[in-house]
Image 1 (tube, one colour):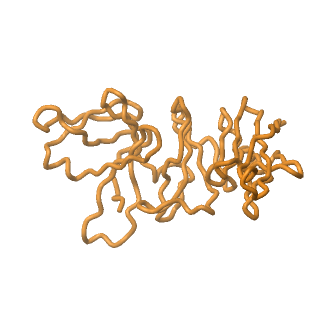
Image 2 (cartoon, rainbow, N blue to C red; image 1 turned 180 degrees about the horizontal axis):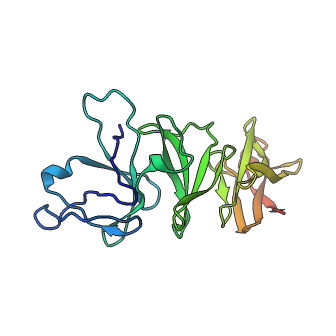
Image 3 (cartoon, rainbow, N blue to C red; image 1 turned 135 degrees about the vertical axis):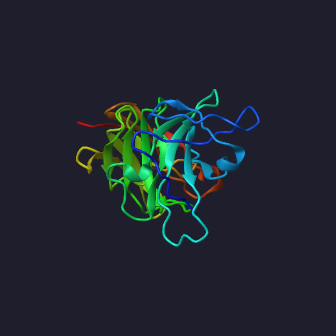
Length: 246
């Protein structure tokens, strides 16, 4: 369970493994700066860490006390650098504007290659995101704020390079014949495409294949529909559809 972390605005303290007999010095921390922490080995046990599975992002939190009966509801998000140092990205996930006021906690689902954007979902710590949950928050690390949020983006969506749009395939009766594009500015579907009558957007891996060529141009792969016979039971790519967002 995730513990309530006490984090001063703009500052935080965390624990990292010591290189010299497990003892390090304590320093103040500004958001985005490297930090070393700071305590003896005995004190380090008060902190727990969790790899999010998204790039080099991890969570730091305090474990709930044994007598705690409520929802533990906060954590710090940090980035592990190649040199072993850690950099705070968000001191308190609970304090992010628009974060849910429930036992759910914002947790990262993906980040852009340059680390500028992080896409969050929300679910209770220790569980997994509900497949039917379409809420997402797009956080900008250069401005330290939520740039966009939506209640209409399912898991598996592919984001435009500027993270202003999200595209996804709509599964119906085991097939994917429609692709939708959601704008974060309006939180509405603004474009899409339908597969040709004898084609499908469902690839051999059972997923839609989407590729953004630029901020407003999406390319969708189109496939043959397997007939069920051994020779044609695997979907084969037959072409592509290009969708322009106006």
